[in-house]
Length: 495
Image 1 (cartoon, rainbow, N blue to C red):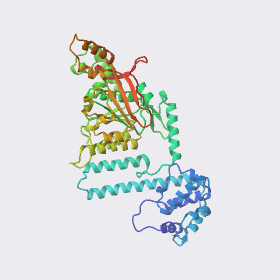
Image 2: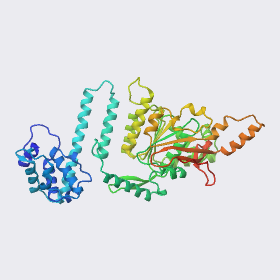
Image 3: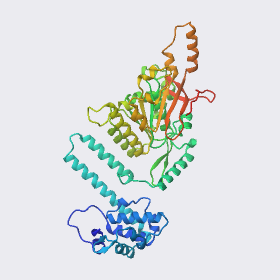
């Protein structure tokens, strides 16, 4: 506060290297607000109290904002009762200081320029803090912190600073939250299909979920052979294929439909993933593609499909055993360089945490799922994370999965906004064919004909919508899920 008074009186050259600031700009802006409260609305959408360098100025800006939002007048007379009367600013009282600010105020026209100057200087101070922390940690690094971890931490902080101008979070007013909700409703109205989220390309799933919602962690689980990877690749392709960018007022681009997809394939290589998608699109069995058992006509279809796919905003990272910190750093980098609307991870149990060795797997999975949920909120993008199920499913007569079947299920179930299970009765029936010619075989054949080519997507948990079962068709040779005809359905169980 003495600094504020000093600069109000006379500017002196400091004898030390001072953090970037402009006390005069802060004084001029606050003076303009005290004289004409309309000046506050010229800066309130981007300027926060924390951006002010002088602590007293933070208090004044915050208090004036509270009064103005309540419809009251903010001026030296109304504000002095809310500030300590005995507090000194140099040789002045706070009340006297407020009066000086108002007396030497600039016009409202200059308010936005002063606000931007204050904001930019706050960002520079935040950059200095990140840089100083990087240097200090590098000089005196903790034993359990590798250089790679420090790089990832610095990259995270810089990304957050680039995205929001600050990295310390804070409360959001309900007024801002309501505006965001209305903007989301408007986006749903303008988007194809009238969805609030990003379309999966599967009509029945979209109808039940409203699309993939921003910031949601969606866990897609199933036993081996159920087709969870196939469903994930189908959705990823549909989103990338539907991508339609729209230029914003600031010159940047945002997805109007579809989106940019980042696919972390920890189990399969990028070539295997591409083969699956090509098989789905060309209707050539992937086994034939791998063995080269294709005709000249099929090869032409493959070439045409590959040329189309090369233009899709679908990016694959095939690093095995990736840590949650590495995955987060690469996702931030992709968003910064190319944009990022949806993340797919195949699958959670193949990831590693940054926990010390010796800690149990449940704690590691907890760290991973908590990190994924935090990343989804940070990037404002839905994350589809695949998960294995425990073997206890196989011990039941009804093998439809339940939430308790999730491996290390505590944290996965808790952190997920949506939990989806993939179930195919056909898979289990194939493995228990009775002896041909018996009554049991006739009954089995009837059940097999009924189940062939059908699957169930069971929405077992959804924070913002109903649970239940979505019927889908499945073509195993093409690894493709599709919407069934209207008159064909799996009995629906709603909760």
